[in-house]
Length: 128
Image (cartoon, rainbow, N blue to C red; front, side, top):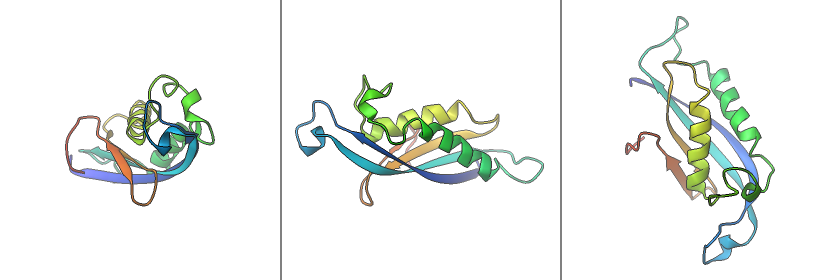
């Protein structure tokens, strides 16, 4: 896909990792930076893959239900571990369902700190 764009937002939430041996098993929070990459083959009549404002709106809507909550109480994290990897996957799945035809989500990266991030790619492809 020749065109790719990136939008960023953030979400603040608390969680604890179940069955983890270490301090992340205890309740703690993050101000995650979230990056979503969108791609496609064709531009619209205005010469855009997707309007940045629409892409940012979709990401913001997905993050709204995850902001300032205890993730362990929010589906699907009430059943799966609220790791950065799972958070990236859930955000990607929820965004993909809202994208217009011809626009595909290629990855979501969740930064839990300036030095640690997890990336989910729906097609499993490496790189990005």
